[in-house]
Length: 225
Image (cartoon, rainbow, N blue to C red; front, side, top):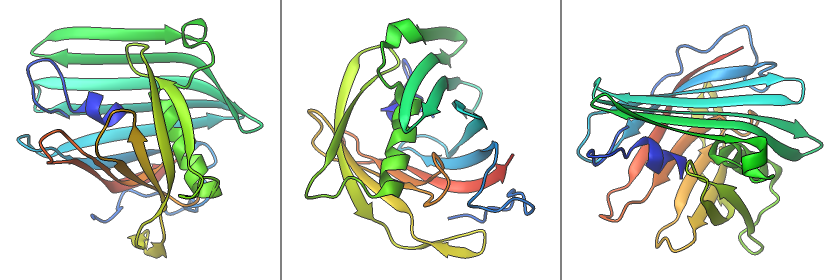
C-alpha cells in the first residue's frame, strides 16, 4: 500500500483532528472544480510527526494525483500519477515514484503500456474513495480490485464500506465515506475515511503493521483550486 511505501525506506523503520485553516473560503467544500491541495499528519511509531502533502488536479477527464512526505531532511518519498476518468472507468497514463534516504535516490516509472490497464497506487486510493461514496460495496457483498505497486508487482485487495463517526470539517459535521480494506496475506485490515463529497480527499487512515502499532494518517487542512 502507498502509506507503507511512504513510511518505509531503506534503513529507516518508518518515514514518512486539527482545524482546516488553510481552506479556501470562496470554494464550496463539495465542489472542488479543479482539485485540491491537502495536508495530512502522519504518526508512525519511532518517528517524528510527519506532514504528507496530497495534490489532486482535474482537467476535464484527466486527473493528476501526487503525494509527498519528508522526514527531517534524512528521507523523502514522492508518488505521482496521471490517468483518465471517463464514464466511471479509470485509464492509467503515467506513474512515477521516488524515494531518497541519506542522499541515495531510487525511482520507479511505469507508462501506460507498462501498467496494461491496471490501477497504480494513486488510482487505487481514488477508486476506493469513489466506491466508498457511491455505497457500492456493502460488507455482505465486498468488492475487490487489482493494482500495481511502485515496482509493478500486482496486488489484490478486498474491501467494503464502513461507518465512521461524524467529523467537524470546515465548521460542518460530516459523516466520512469509510472503507475497510484487506490486502491478500495481511492479517489486519486498513481503515480509510474519505470526504463524503470530494473524491480522493482522505480524512483519516489507519494502516496496521506487524508489531501491532499502526501508522495513523489524519486530515489537517485543504485548499481547493
